[in-house]
Amino acid sequence: MRKKIVAGNWKMNLDYAGGISLFSEIVNMVRDEKKGDQIAIICAPYIHLNSLAKLGGDVVKIGAQNCHQNDSGAYTGEISAGMVKSVGCEYVIIGHSERRQYFAESNELLAEKTVKVLANGLTPIFCIGETLEERNNGTYFDVLKTQLEQGVFGLSADDFAKIVIAYEPVWAIGTGLTATSDQAQEVHAYIRKEIAAKYSSEVADETTILYGGSCNPKNAAELFAQTDIDGGLIGGASLKSRDFVDIVKTFNS
Ligand code: PGA
Image (cartoon, rainbow, N blue to C red; front, top):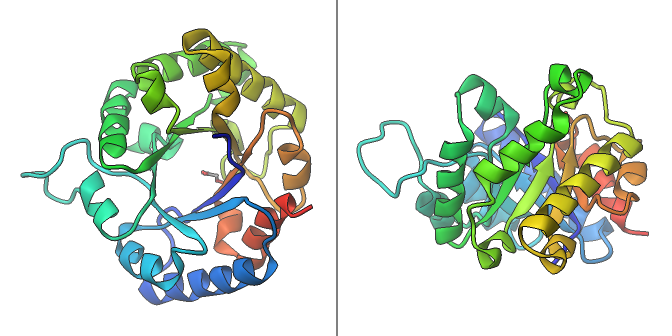
């Protein structure tokens, strides 16, 4: 079912004590101030996940920012979907543009990871987005379509219905340049249209599609008011409890 989600992505920030302290603030504020059925999620570095889930995973859901595509084995330094599941995680970000760019993660690899995340009963937050060059040369719809086709359109309709999509234009991530609500809505409507063409209009209507890229308390309301935008994936602003919770509260009224 289509949900209202605000997911924070802490990226590679905060040591252990810093993560506990920020998460405690967020949990207390969400508990006191959130009204409605929106879901707040924090996707933290692996070292935090176990403690955060115990501290307040019932109030603010916990997500990982990545996982490996295999179950276990000789993959030094890697973490499996089963491992993050075992500490109380419910979500995993897959295919963030920083993983695609700095770790050369291909659509094919991301498709494998998505399958593994689902097999472990977790919800993938599958990210797609175009670069500035692709936006400017007008190829962005093609780029997004390829990311969908190769990344998630191999899933059965039943499995596809379990995933969350995040549209994150690369040029808007961490740059302070937000897509306008019209630009974001145009792409979200396009994504929904492609899902309808691949699966069905019912599946498309039920898919939760988040916007990410310099989303903040000032612009969230206008973005989330768009017909096809169901919430946000929040980077920088999720590192400030007040800002993150104010974005969650955008759905209060
Ligand atoms: P940003 O990051 O909000 O700092 O632009 C978004 C993201 O990378 O998920």
